[in-house]
Image (tube, rainbow, N blue to C red; front, top):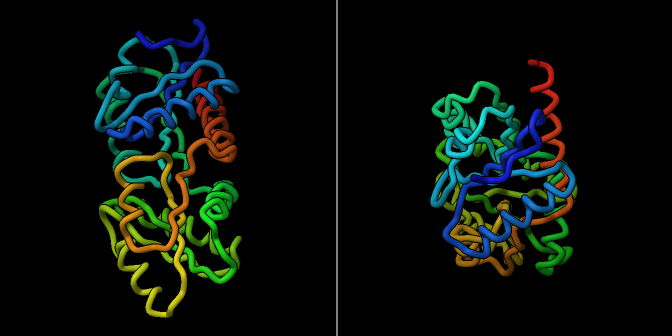
Amino acid sequence: MAPLSEPGSVRRILVAHGTRSAHGVAMVRELAAAVAGRTGPLDVAFVDVLGPSPSDLLRESDIPTVLVPAFLAAGYHVHTDVPGHVARSGHARAVVTAPLGPDPALVGALVRRLDGAGLRPDDRVVLGATGSSDARARGDVRIMAGHLGARLGRDVPVGFLAAGEPTVAETVARIRTSGARVVIAAYQLADGLFHARLMETGADAVAAPLGLAPEVIDLLVARFAAGAAELAQTR
């Protein structure tokens, strides 16, 4: 059984997508450990590729539980999948918080990742996201592109890898017609298949995922605190 919070307190579950990349899974677990260092013990659940699932963990106990979706946009997994796990588990006191993004607090982390990738003053930046069939999630990515563009003082178009238009490769190709150098800001939490695909889109450089950026940790801590406060109001 996964470790639980102290009796009478709140259990915390960080919900991630899941990846076949061992490095990506390790990054999620390192992120969870960093957050747990400030919140107290927490568990990690995955909605795809590997387990345990949120419903697996929720069935372990009836301790009041906060689930934080570590997703950068609110699509199917946030609106449908995670709440569905809660419903199927039969857990009586579980709260699903807002996802990790979009949030203007993440801009600083994106800028540092771009600087680490060698961003130059005249470079064009593309926000590269996995994509979603859910229009709300694609809208969230565009919101984040607006936040990043405001910080950089330039337009930041978006590109999607799996679902949504335009694709990252299309956006990069369009910008290249102007002769500009293109750098992709990876709007992704961890390494994995989709970050590898960003490397194949024709850009001059691709920034690292957000990973263990302090802004990510701060936001997750804040989400857990908000969920605990919501639970406290229902006692």
